[in-house]
Length: 120
Length: 106
Image (cartoon, rainbow over all chains, first blue to last red; front, side, top):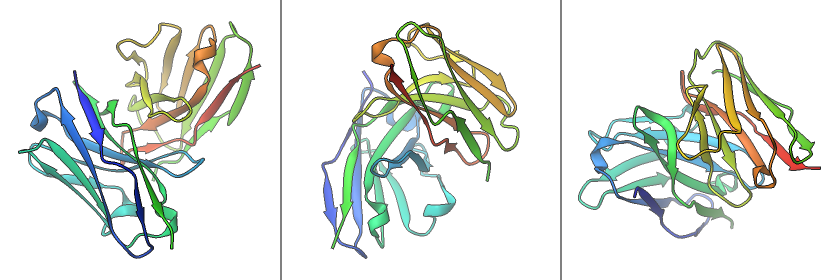
């Protein structure tokens, strides 16, 4: 079955960078892209962007352009999210998600989430 | 950017009640509207895609309707396991989520 397993919690300082990984299994990796969504404590869901696992094309949310990089590694069927110049406002649970057949943004499968805490 | 408004922000209803959640967008998103359920401490779960399509495995008491700017998620008979926050998501332009509706049992 389709599975997305994310890397463990991270604690970072303001100004630093963090990398979150999303290991996929159970499907042909290059057939679907990966979407990243985050959720600050007690807040709603925020769409960060999408990357094609087929050709690496990306679509970043306006707010994240220039500070976020999404990549994929077909050899390990893993997607990565890099966030730079962290501030305390980046403290959140970060999710990776995959679409269902027929719709990349019909996010039918989700990772378990990775808590990133930014604190001095 | 397309603005999204979910209402109410929270509601409390009795088991067995019919519950209606709404999502309004600032401009037409045609049928590019999805609904998710997020139970406390869990990842979101896709309920409805493309406004009206029930995701596989989701109970039939959930239903979606609407197109253009006004959408509805209906729970025909509220169950205790439906306690959650429900989010709409438009994917017509840059994808975005609404602020959510919290559903509780009275």
